Length: 183
Image (cartoon, rainbow, N blue to C red):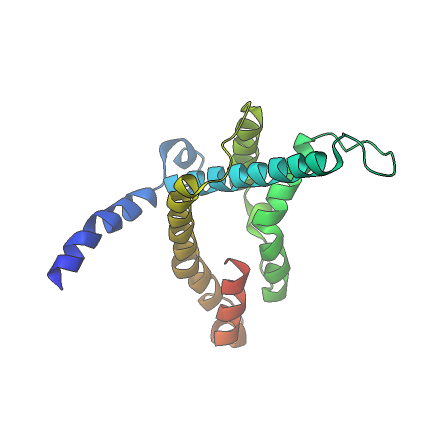
């Protein structure tokens, strides 16, 4: 059993390091960590890859930049892409937070939405992004697993158990519903 623990120690230490708040954000009282920045970069990159693949597939299928009805394909828009990203990030939270009587985090602090905006801008500035492949997606799926583990173990339960209403704080169904929101 100690051999398995020795194998997992580097992963545990790396994960603990990735959860430490980083300097530029701590200056403003925010606890944004390396894992947050990497996960935001991963999401913005994956959404751009998806948009480009869908657009290329549409153009390849029709062979032109117009639809069958003669309408031009819509131009890429940074604001539309940013709002799509923010909807992916905060859509579930905005639905469940109101049911729990909580204020969504994007309304409490604008640091994380600004982080996503900055990362989205950097990803959009890149001339090209790599197409999804097994060699790229396998390590990134491990990163996704770590970020979801963090959300499900460190973020969701304290939010629910610290709720002012005892019926919400003691409800296992509330934990299940809010964990589905973040998975």
